[in-house]
Length: 477
Image: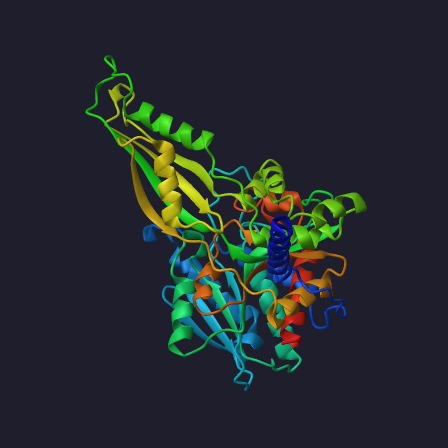
C-alpha cells in the first residue's frame, strides 16, 4: 500500500509540473499570411538609415550626452512619419522619452508597443565602416542602433503609418512608448508607467525588445525558432573592496589588498551558482523539442524527468545557454594602485550579476558572502532588482503574439524563454501581467553577435518582415 501511495504522489507531482509547463507552450496556430499592403521595404530602410545617422548615444554622465542629437531625432520622426504624428497624440516625458496614444474609441485595455532610440557607444570597437553612416549595401542597413533598437522603432512606425494611411482605427487604444535612456537603465520607461498609472490605465499587453527569430541555436531543432521572452533575469551590481595601509612596492606585504581580492574573484569563478531548469525554460524545451528529429523528440518529451541532466547540459552548451539556467557573475572592472611603484591601499572589482528566476537580490548576496568567505572583503551593493514576474502565456494576448510571428515566419517554431538581459519592459510588469519581449526580425548568429559590438546591421528584408509583424498585430487586436 505504501508503494502505491508513493507512486500516486509521484504521479500527481509529475502531472502538476506538466500542467505548469504546458501553460507556457504557445498555441498551435496557422494564421493567414501578414498583409504587407502599404509597406515599402526600400523606403523603410532609407528612413532607418537616416535615423541611424543621428548619434543618440546615451551615458550616465549628462555632460557626455549630445542633447541636440536626441532633439534632432525626435524632430525627424515628425517629418518622416507625418500621418502618425497627425493622428496619434504625442507627449515628451522627462528628458526625451516619447509616449504616443492611438485612440480607438474603445474602453478596452490598451496595447503598448515599446522601443528605445538611445544607443551604446562605439569607442574602442573595430568597425569596418563609419558606425553612424547608415550605409545601405547589398540589402543590409549598417550602423549603431540598426537592430538595438532603432530597427524595432522604425518597424513599429512603418506599420502604424501604413494603417493610418489606410484609414484603419485599432480595436483598442495603442500606446507607443519610446525610451531615450534604456541603455543606461534610465527613467524614461518608468515615467511612462507612472503616466499610465496616474490615468488609471492597465495595459492589455506590452511588447518590447527581447528574443528574435534565429536558426541553428537550439540543439537538434532544424529551421527557424522564434523565442518570446516571458520574463527577464534580475540585475545586481556589486563591488568587492579590500583595503590595506599601502607603502612602497619595494617592500611588499604578502596577502595584500589585490591578492585578497584576487582570491575572492577566483572563489566566485570556481563556485558558480547552481544550474537549475526553471519551468519557463522547460516550456521552451517542450515547445522546441516537438520540432526535433524523432530520437531527440523522445528525450525532450521526458524533459521533466531529466531536469537536472538537461540543466547541466545547457550550462555547458555555450554562453547563452548557460545564462538561461543559472545566475551569472561577470567581473567587468578591476582597480588597484594608481602608481606602478606604490602598494594598493584599496583594490576593487565590479561584478555584474544576472539573477536567475527563483532567486532574489538578497539570496544572491547571501551566497556570494558564503563563497567569498573572507570578512576582509567588503561587498558593496551599487544597485539591483529582482527577476521580473513571469508573464501569462495562456491568454489571448500571447496567442495574438504567436499568430503574428507565424504570419510572417510560418515555419518557425515559437517558444517561450527567459531574457538574460535587462529591458525597459520590466517596469511595465507593475501594471500588466502580459509583458512580452520579442524583436520580430530573423537574424543570423553573426548579426546577433554584433549587438553592442562592431558592425551592427540588419537586413532590409528582416526589417520589412518586422513591420509586417506589427501590422498583423495591430490589425487583429
